[in-house]
Length: 82
Image (cartoon, rainbow, N blue to C red; front, side, top):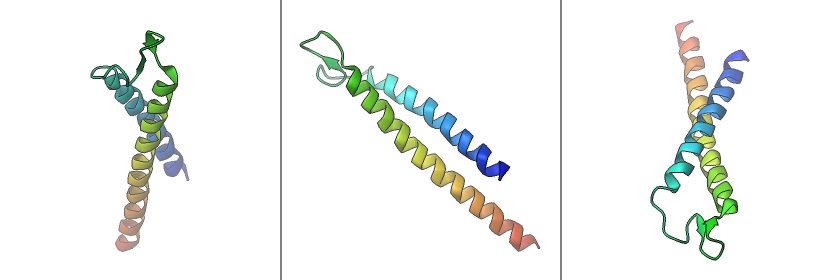
């Protein structure tokens, strides 16, 4: 059980880091309508939050699938050794 908990925490941490980095990258190359509000002259925070949670959800799913594959393969290898 401890291995699963560690994999969940590991997945959540790296998903958070990846989502933050990808959101910041979104500011590097943007069209005037992507993450800024032309009428307000500033950042459209709702779009930024939506982008962040989109990246977080995507990376969390990918990390969890990878973790699940790791746990299943380690159990199968453990059974094959016995």
